[in-house]
Image 1 (tube, rainbow, N blue to C red):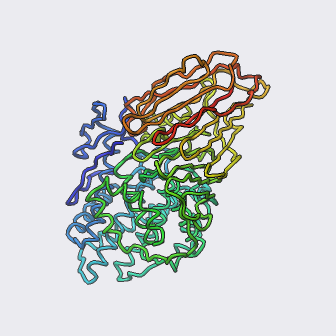
Image 2 (cartoon, rainbow, N blue to C red; image 1 turned 135 degrees about the horizontal axis):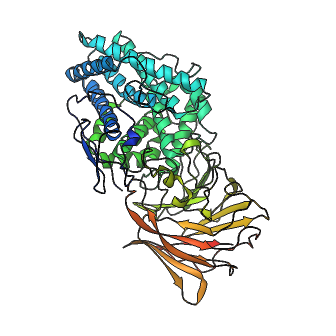
Image 3 (cartoon, helix red, strand yellow; image 1 turned 30 degrees about the vertical axis):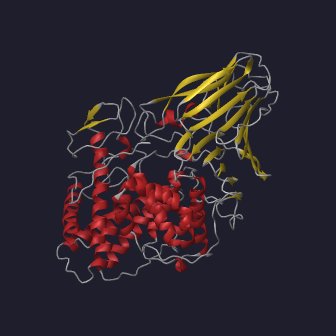
Amino acid sequence: MTATPQTTYERPAIPNRPGGWWHNFACPVHGAELLPGESTSETQTFRCPAGCEVSGEPYSGAWTVMCHQQAARRIRLAGHRGDAAHVFEALAQYRALLDTVGNKPNEDAEPWMVRGRLFHQALTEAIWGVAVADGIWALCEQLPDFDWGPAEDDARSLLAAILETVRAGRAELIDAGKLKSNYTAWLTAAERLASGALAALDGDLDTRGDLMTGPVGLARHLQAAILPDGWEWEGAPYYHMFVLRASLLSLRGWSAVEIPEETQQTLRAMIGALTAISTADGTVPAIHDSPVARRAQDLEYLETMELASQLFPDLVAQTAAIRDAAAARLGSEARETVAMIRGWIGGAGDGVAGRSESGPGTQTGAAAGPAEPAQPEDAVGLSVFPDAGFGIVRQGGTGFSAILDFGPHGGSHGHFDKLALYFYGRGVWWQPDPGAPPYGSFLRYPYAGVRSHPTVRIGNGEQAECSGKLLDTRMDGGTAFLAAETRGAYPGVLLRRRVIMAPDHIIDIFDVEADHGADTPSGEISLGFRPDVDFAVRPVPGDPLQWRSTWGEGSELLFGTHLLPHTPQGPFGLRSVPVRAPADRPHLWRSGADWTLDAGLAGNPSRGSRPCTQPPIRQPDWTFRTAESS
């Protein structure tokens, strides 16, 4: 994995112009996120990882957003350190900039955006505003008797501007019936922090406001946005964390006993969902519209897990893998972040609002109740989230996990990946979800498409937005069974995937059945293999229906056996194809494969399928086996 480097400013380095939309910070040739620049000048040149150079808009405006966010972080850190000189200088610069911008929505924003003032989007302004407001609030706490002088007017003016922008943006969302939008969480957080900072300037360091009781406050938003199994409705781990982080930041100065039990239950379930889907080494899979391996993202996950542990101290161990993995990549930035948010929330004792550990054994939903009894370290585990549509099987000893994605599409952040099966290991991404590049990249929609995912496509057609149905989820004799299907991906076609995980192998069976109908698509059936490791396939001599594959190198290897249950009527084969690397490296290519057969699908129903019957390969090697029908 690679991380995007970011500049750290020790003194205020406030860009002298508004920011644009950070998602435009992408190479127009390779689609990759650009490398950081050295200034916010409109003539600044930016390089892409493949060596291209670009300058001007929209790249300069996108980079300016990142510089503003970094400047806001430095204000926040300075406030918590009691560095009044830094905070005052930055506030004066920002007030001057806002006076120049004027009290009007950003005129360069795209029509679909909820517009900000300093940035194209009110969402961006809310994220920036949370950091600035916290810096002001923290400085009031650090220096309660300090004479702010003219800086107080700067602070009040800035906070008033933040409140005006976020309240207008939230009203626009509510009027449009979008209470459950992830924007709402951040607009609410910014309102809460800005209001708290204004109260702190008045000497009131113990403000709560109507965060829980207001008609568009935190409690109401969580009721609208969070599914019964604990997942944010879009089903994207990054946006789930995004909403969870904003919600926890909103609770500055609260203690757990003041939070309604229903809200506690929801937050606990959200934490459980995120930790359940994470891998043994703390990687949170980039499913659907989730960025991959960004340094700013590490800061977000670290802060979220720290705040989660403060609210629920009994979840410290459960959140440790994600928190520690992010901290290891961040170094000193991790230490300053943890110090900055120490004491943010007063925690609940063990047992408040139930527990949600996700260990080996069967679990349905993040708030399913007490953890299963302790299991051997190498035991197979199964977790299922039926509303978001994630089935997770894992083997404790090797750290291998597989995720079956069968849930709702997830709105604008969904991908066309129904019944995709992802493989992760400890420190290795065997077959990951490729995630998403910046949304301004021309590769955003190709990455969202079915060709980028390890699932079935028919001909050259894209899957439709659809949801799957959970068929089976159980543990039997130390083996996990998981199955789901969908009839909505292609007209007249049933797709069904079954996953069986034993202590030393995983079996993957994919069935495709077609109705006799004019709308049934024709063309090849292709099951995609999308590894992010060295990968090779080869036929088995003397058996035209069977192939072998090798994944990885050195001591980290998977071996696959793949077979068809009968000879198809048309051409078939497992052939190597080039596939793009995950979205943090879209300019690079990997060797993947398409298992393809031309079955004359229209009007030719499937004849069923069966699992491979070869004996499993014992540890330390892993094997997975697939069977496909025509």
